[in-house]
Image (tube, rainbow, N blue to C red; front, top):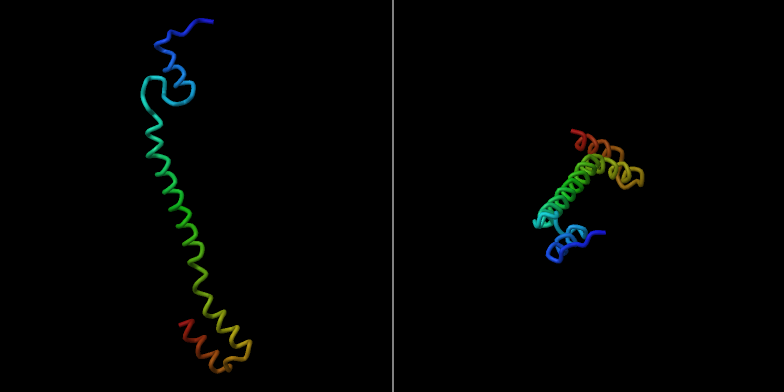
Length: 89
């Protein structure tokens, strides 16, 4: 096994531990910018998916409430028909 010169040993150790690219540069600094950017993009996509997934269910809810009120006897059939006509217009 060859002996590593004392001067180059820290560079080799740093490269083996993933602290640098072996050329003396500090490549992990790019991840300090890139990783938070990726997290923000991921969160934006999640919020967008949740928004568009739940957006379509809001339109049918008032009619369901109206049907439930009619089934419980809170409103008459004439009131149900009139309010349903207004909702569907």
